[in-house]
Length: 169
Figure 1 (spheres, one colour):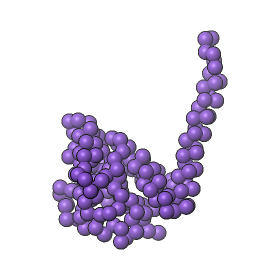
Figure 2 (tube, one colour):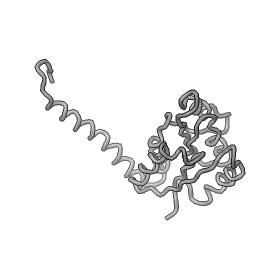
Figure 3 (cartoon, rainbow, N blue to C red):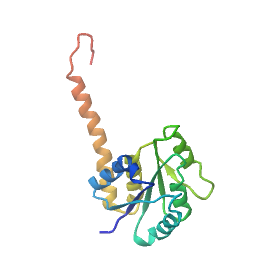
Figure 4 (cartoon, rainbow, N blue to C red):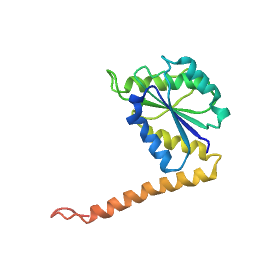
């Protein structure tokens, strides 16, 4: 089984955030790989990884980074694959610095960016991109999205059962 998604983080300290993407992809049975690479400490390895990702069958790269958050942009500069950046909370601005760094890419080097610590949304976005050319993944994403509405419907039924003297619904 070859991975379709590559999840990259600057160091294993990012694991608590990035594992949300891993768990979601695993639950959807979408093959993925995970690596730690640093734009500042291992720049040659980052470029080599990014340049070879497509040839290895990767369809989307999810890159998590905090503070200066260079990793998603460095990866995007070295591949034509879509890159989804996950700003990781930390540093003096609690992840806003990372978010601004990731979204402010120069023309020609786009990085899709999700909210601070929103690795699960990055996984969902990656699956939606893959679904454009993969009917099986499209079906899984559609079922997941449908289940979101079912959860709210159930919540409303549960809320309707709660009784108060002045509650009207």
